Image 1 (cartoon, each protein chain N blue to C red):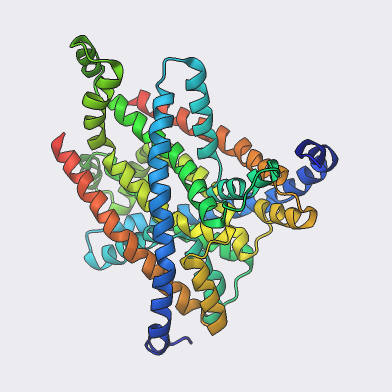
Image 2 (cartoon, chains in turn blue, purple; image 1 turned 45 degrees about the horizontal axis):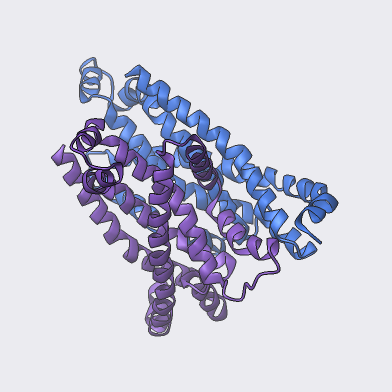
Length: 221
Length: 227
């Protein structure tokens, strides 16, 4: 059977099956994004601390997680954590793994954003009697968000693409279902191409949004 | 509770040589796909700044597609799809290693194309005009004036790409290449020590990638000073 005959006969079945993997893909991406946003902020604040004992572990964390592949981190969590008495479900492992990995990257975005705000702003806030925490919360971060938004959007795209590896720890997302379909029907070309097209339908519009945000940011300056 | 130091002292003399042997394949994939990505990257970047609209559009499309796809999907498409689309040809030479190098190379080409283009565009247009007005051909202006200067600008981002590539080779295990992750999986599950083995693998990746990232950071610092 030729490529198009297969597509005509099974195309709809392929499409609906692959589509049913999207909830898991989006759930992992969203969960990991929230995890990374919260944890990344903590890491970033630790990294700009004046206290060496706080700065050092956060630097080590960022260096280590950026220096090793996400797949290895996922394997450590999914296959390794049971050795410590905790067996995560595939989705939990994926969210924790990609979230911890993402926190390392996102903390650098936070840090660059915070450092883009002039030091005088903090000093002014402190001299007005604000605590360092409330200066960060009310003065620095609200302004830094503008700078951080475009790279954050880009990061969200990267994260969404990274979810394509979590089938390796057993999450039933798009790629997992694509592989199942291939074993089931013994045809691979239309299935993988269709899965790829589905990713493009999400990532290309997101990239457009990121590019627009970046243009707006530059217009502000 | 897991006593990692004890596990390592007992097993490392068996695990480390085996994992290092597998990591040679990892380095080989990274090396060849890097070369391929540079070649593709230059070609696509030149198409991207071409005066012919069709060529430019094709280049933009290929960049958008390759950058929008997860690398795993690129690997799966490059490795599994062509033999099925053209079953009449002889595909016996197309093994998982070749597929991995080709897939990572194509994906990297799209990323590097944008890096190269921004490097070329960072140079003042006057440079090219001056070269042309001195009677150089456009090709000569490119190879003698633009590229030598652009190379310096693009070195740090290319280095960052190389670090990413080294880590991305771990995905080749998913199409069955016998690299370090594959070796680690077989050791981890035959010895029932997943935690210890995968942490060791992470350490090996770190030892490979960290010197590169220090080098890139040194280059970035020098660039900042130069400007």
